[in-house]
Length: 386
Image 1 (spheres, one colour):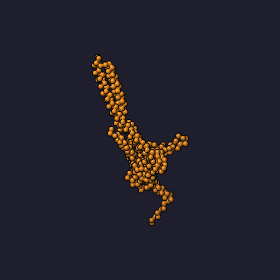
Image 2 (cartoon, rainbow, N blue to C red):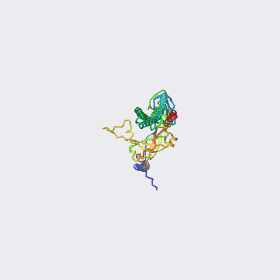
Image 3 (tube, helix red, strand yellow):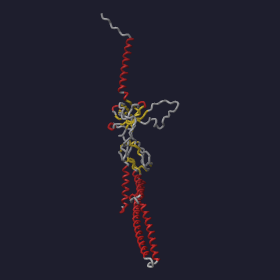
């Protein structure tokens, strides 16, 4: 006869549950340990990260009244495109006066060089007169002894003295002319160059009545209005080039021990969610914590001090192709995760930057236009003496 199975007692069931739970916890602990050893300890992440970029301020270099505003918020502008037009009337009058003064200085320089040539010719005449007077005196002195009267000999001697004095005066006049013209030309005379500098200054003041876009980007923070009288340095608007953005990820100080320049970074933007990933690299670690560079740095020398974990900004690059496919805006929130496997990079940068971080060439054309205007005025007033 078969024997009926014995039902487990409540204490036995509890023991089995505890064993299973302990085994489950052990497996979970082993899985977490393996995950931490193989993956987690090689990654540092933070959600305290934001998109950053260059904010190019548009400020006038001269005062004036705003006549037109040719770009508004959210507009895309290209480098060199006019943004704000000022009234150029005063600058135009100053430029015309400077040009007239330059023309006058060129003609005066021509007169100086003509005077030098005349002084040289006058010296040659005086030298010939002295030579003739000395020869005449020598003949009279040889014929002395009754053939030549003493009065006539005295007149010859007086003529020599007069001719010598005239020669000395002509030499001094030539020296004075040479002092004003030596080592230069009418076009390069100091007075002409000083007047040319005034033309450059006036030309720049007139061209600065038009404020161009230094770089290509999007207009933001427009505050200027038509009819407003603005002063040099007043912020009128900003341009944000969205093609050169980066991410400022603020990591805790305890996360920086193995962080190196050049390590790969995976980023996600809240605006696109987890379906879009960006890939970049660590460009550099900040030289101080965020609190040090705040407007009012924290003062911890108090009796009720409480330690607060500090954060250090880490600059992360963004891939240009990914940025073009999914544009970002300055200030957007990001999630950043740094892969720490590669430890070959330096902790801090040691190589000086070779290329400018940002530059513009839209202002160089103004100098070329001023030089062309000056050359035209000088050539028109040099005449046949050039």
